[in-house]
Image (cartoon, rainbow, N blue to C red; front, top):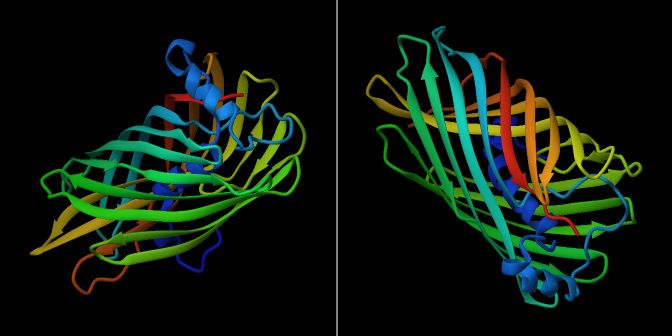
Length: 321
C-alpha cells in the first residue's frame, strides 16, 4: 500500500482495511442462498441500479463471510537488550459483511469481526497468553454512476489480552471504485484509526487487472496476489496477506503493550463445496514483521522476529451472480 509511513505503523491498519475494502468491492453483490429465506433480497439487488462486476473471469468474488483457523510455528523475538522469547500462535477468526438495499443506488453494510489468538510460550521468561479482538463495522455504499462506486465505514474495535483490561479504538474510512474497462478497475480512499495512544491516517490505492478468463493480477491492498481459476469451482492464489495480534507484558514496573503484526507469504487452494460455500486451505511462511512498543516515552525498538511456517484452513461464503 503506498504510504510514507513505516511498515510497523502500516501493519496496524490491515485488519480494518481488509474489511472496509471488502465492503466497497462486494457490498453491491446479491447473495444467492436458500430462496425460502433470501429470494426477495436477491430480487431487490437484481432490480436495483447498482452495477455488478464487469468482464468475464472465473475468479470468484471476495468472501462476504468466513470462519478460519491458522497455526504458526515457533517464532523467536530478539529484544534490543539481547534477550529473546519464543512462542507458537494459534488463531481462530470469524467475520461477515452483509449488504441491505436502501434505495436503487444505496446499500447499508452491517458486519462483525471476531479473532481469538493463543500464544503458547516456549520460553521460561514469557508466560502463555490469549488475545481477544472484537469489531462491529457499519458502512454505506452508493452507485454514483455506471463507472464510479463509493462507500464509507466506521468500526468500533476492542482488544483484551489475558489479565488486562479492554482497550478500545475506532477505525473508519472512505473509498471509491472506478471501472476503467472490462478488465481493469481502480480503488482509492483514506483510512483513519483513532485510539487512546495515537491517531493514524493513511491514503489507500489499489487495482485489479484480469489478464484473461483464468488469470488475474490483484493489487488490492492489503492482499496483493496472483490468482488463477481454471473454472468456476476452483481458485489458486499466491501472494501476501496480513495477520496480527496484540499482547501485553511487564518490564520492571512499567506496563508495556506490544503489537505484533506480520505479513504472510503463502499459496492457497479453494474449492466450491456447494452453492456459495467454499473450502480453502493455505500454507506459507510468516514474512515481513513489524513490532511497535507503547509506554511512557518509549519509541519503536529495534527488534528482530524470526520467520515461521504456518497452515490455515477455513470455510467462506462467496456471492455469485
